[in-house]
Amino acid sequence: MPAIPHAVPHNLLEDILAILTGTLLVSLGVAMFKQAGLFTGGTAGLAFLIHYISGINFGIVFFAINLPFYWFAWQRMGWQFTLKTFCSVALVSAFSSLHPQMIHLSDITPFYVAIIGGSLMGVGFIVLFRHQASLGGINILTLYLQDKHGIRAGKLQMGMDIGIVLASYFIVSPIAMIASVLGAIVLNLAIMLNHRPGRYLAV
Image 1 (cartoon, rainbow, N blue to C red):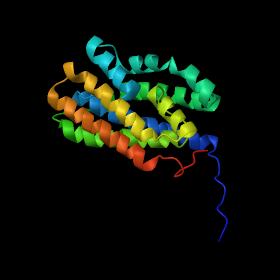
Image 2 (image 1 turned 90 degrees about the vertical axis):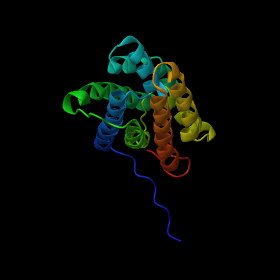
Image 3 (image 1 turned 90 degrees about the horizontal axis):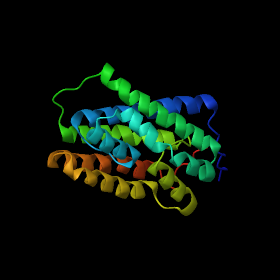
C-alpha cells in the first residue's frame, strides 16, 4: 500500500487569496440577507440585530462586536489564527458595506436568498476554516471545541445560530424569521458536510 503523503502547508499567497475569496463570499451572502431583511447567526447575527434596532452601519457593529473575542483566540488558537481572523473580520466589515454600492437586487424572494445567501456564506466559512481563519465570536469557540474535543463545529454552530435567529422574532416578520432559520440551516449544513474532524487537515 503506498504511503499517504504528508499535508503541504498553505503558503502566504495561498492564505491571502483564500481569505479574500472567503470574505468576499461571506460578505456577499450578508449583503443579500441584509437587502432581504433576513437574519443570520453568530456575531454577524448579533450585528444584524443591533443594526436593525439602532440603524448603525452593519460593518462597524460587526467589527466592534468581535473585538472581545480576539484575546481568547490569541490564548487558545495562537497568534497566526488570531491575525487571520482579525483580517477576515475587517474585510467582511468593509466588503459588506461595499457590495450595496456595486450591486442592487430588487424584488428578491426571502427563501431564495436564504438558500443562495446561506450557501455562499457556508462555502466562504469553509474556505476560511481551511486556512486557519474564522470570522470571530462563535466561530472561534466552535473551532476550538472541534479541534480540542471533537465536537462537530457545524452542529454546535447550527444550534447557536438558530437560537440567535429566533431572537429576531419581535423585529422581523414571521416569513423573514422562517427564511432566516432556513438560511442558518443551509449555512451550517455546508460546514457540517465539508469541515469535520478527520476529513480535512488545515495547515
